[in-house]
Amino acid sequence: MATLNDVAKKANVSKMTVSRVINHPEQVTDELKTLVIQAMKELNYRPNTAAKALVNNRTLVIKFFILEKMSTTEPYYMNLLTGIAKGLEAEQYSLQLVTQNNFDIGLCDGYIMTGVRQKDYEWISRATKPVVLFGEN
Image (tube, rainbow, N blue to C red; front, side, top):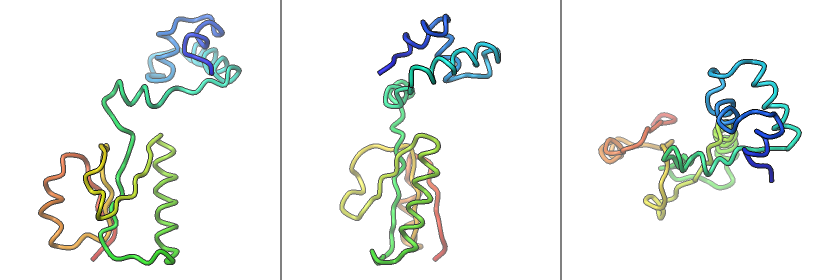
């Protein structure tokens, strides 16, 4: 597996330049970006998202709460889950489906909730991470 150092050597630039191309491309000239991106492709380099999450104190996990009874045979939920998962994946996030029994398991960067009822607003208002409420009840 190629490292940041390998990419820097291949592109004949510093590791800091490679890092800037990945994290702050607006700070790098187009010529340097092209060199680094070409080296990344040739080496099949993929940034380590776990390391990036650790450095930025993020989990890259979004919890999805379904707070209403659902039928596992209902195609709506499969389409919904697939759409949300694809959208999150494009931003390097993972989706965690939350059931009644694992509300408090693990850390996350935010919540998506569907099936929210009036009685749920009180505990949702205490959330310390961003919350997106989906659907109407």
